[in-house]
Image (tube, rainbow, N blue to C red; front, side, top):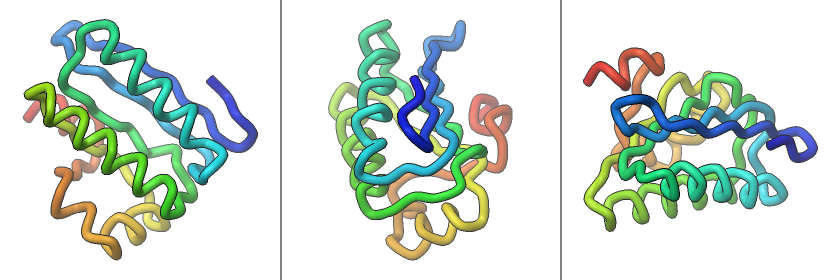
Length: 115
């Protein structure tokens, strides 16, 4: 799904892990697209969620809140959530708000799937 400056694509890996690739800019206007993608992989039976943020160039507080909501919803169903590949501007926001203390970060999607 593409919304303005944000592109979001979700798929379920053979191991049942939902992978949502997010690229562009995640702000208030893009949050619904992210939430829809997360819901769609959950609807396919995935309780584990991996967000690939390697293509994300900007994220504001709305994006942070969306990630926290996704984390909470994932944990409620007994799953886990991981973040892969955040670029320096997005990583700075993640670290500034302490999101890296709540959600494990990985350099690549492959690293996150291997763990």
